[in-house]
Length: 193
Image (tube, rainbow, N blue to C red; front, side, top):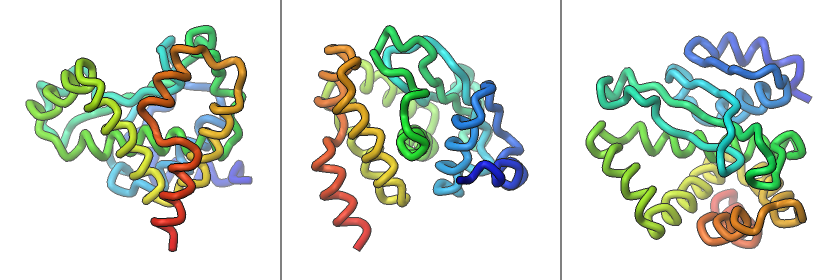
């Protein structure tokens, strides 16, 4: 139980974080996952609820083209409309939530390596190239595991795979683009020896 740690997390990592939610479990999961990404501690990140076609989504702020890479800000959206996906993020266990937020942070690490023009090209490739999307999502899963959040990621994936409420479209996209339960276990064993 990390509930008594949230103030410490906010003091250590929260200076440039804007968590636009009243959900204490989500806030705490955000900081527990962020703890594994020290290079993001001084990065501007906003977490907010939004109606989106996935459970979570990470992206640069819209003004990224006009910012230096070092000044770039990011947003993580959490779906507040479960009818779009069949998943209510609130049904995820705390561990699953940490793992999935960790996956979003892995995307931010990737974005942080790119210059603005590269990032713009990457976004276009992600949207229009299915192989690019698959490679990007699987790499984010692998980075999450390398950061020590493999068990947490696995917990979220097991929940997803066993959840009968997940929409067919969302299930198909997840199965095509992300690591499966079995692949995560293999990667955990490979990276945590």
